Length: 161
Image (tube, rainbow, N blue to C red):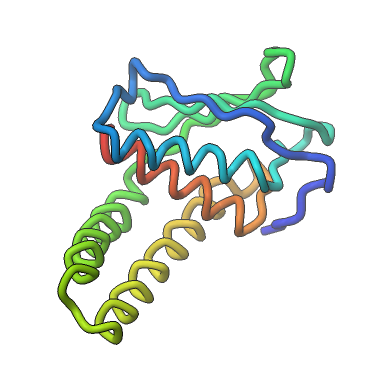
């Protein structure tokens, strides 16, 4: 599995289909905005068998699938990939559970306990990022940092989706 896209290949826009995902409370909306900002700021993203360039990604959900609608910056279609959400369910559920523990711990737990929970949280996030890279293998070339940022968005989408 290659994790090196052409250096000039990247996402320059990410949008979410509000009809399939819906709106959330201010905390989740903030997480979405930060995840998108971080992804746009630094990423490596190239659809397999397509020329290097700048891409726009539109994410939506359809029939229990995550839709990666990839387009050129002028809006012309490049490719759309549908990914089953099933491989992510356990990781996302566990990730939310440990995040809840983390946020509860930062109020009352010892620094050692907070650090241990945070290490577990980061480990689950890494696991989800690796699953995403596996699911996109042969479809889209991304690096691990980009996979982490995309997995953050998937978690935010799952929260409402």
